[in-house]
Length: 435
Image 1 (cartoon, helix red, strand yellow):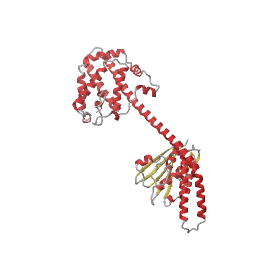
Image 2 (tube, one colour):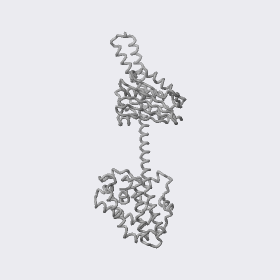
Image 3 (cartoon, helix red, strand yellow):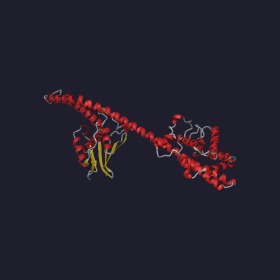
């Protein structure tokens, strides 16, 4: 299949290596033109083809030697083309490529022959270089693997060398050297088009990342303004309401029928207060203030904090790796927040048979903290969005907890990875490197 995909693809859109369906222009990636590549890589010379020719020592003597080969080779070119395609059509995978039948094969034969004739015609100038680049760009568009191109070119090389050696021409050795040089140049040009494609994909990736960062920055600025407004308009009145309700509750007898309403009102006020705090933390992230942190003590403190959490009642919790002291240079308060949030999330994902395991491990670059639960797990599409701000599958919550954790971890130069499977629980791995 590789041979049929290679050189005959000149000036035809009906040739397709994988599907029997004709590709459309929309299915192809945009191709970076040489001028765009030079703009991206300033170190690339404008006279690239001249550079290539100098590198293989290709000069006018070689051009004349190739021109002398054209007339003797013209009668055997049809034989080379026919043999090339007969070999292809005997291979089942290659035969499946020719969805257009004999009409398509005949068209490809003519294109292949034109490519062979131009190989010996010249002039080997910028126009020649651009025509050859266009052929390579077709290979890229149809997703032709690079090694196919190299192996097919070698078949062409061997066929031409064999024919020339049987012709008995004067100065055959010099002509063979010229042929080797031009075929090396053809390979270099083809390889250059694959580099163009790589650079194009790098540009597209960089642009996407830039757009993402820009969107996040704008989003963060909006959230920051909203959080500041909420903090001013809600937080202080909320504290006043909470205080008033506590006073009212304190005046009621323990068995008063409104006592439960007071308790629930205070719980809802606490939820609102936590939501405002999450918004402020997310919108106004602080750079880590690093100190020497003992992770063993961090876990113990987290458990003291969570012991009274309703979601932690009945949870079986254990922490592995505590026999050895694990230390890292990090922001202790921020790591405490990360660990607490991950443990609460794990508890919320479990039922009455909840089991949560925290594992601490010292690694070469720093420390690794793993929080694993046996809860309901997550679908792949939920995992992909789990750390997005304001995304949540819970009936309660702001959807900022995991997003804040990820931001804190990344501000430390670390990474947060989520591994989950529906019905089998979730494992979150946090790596914090030493600076």
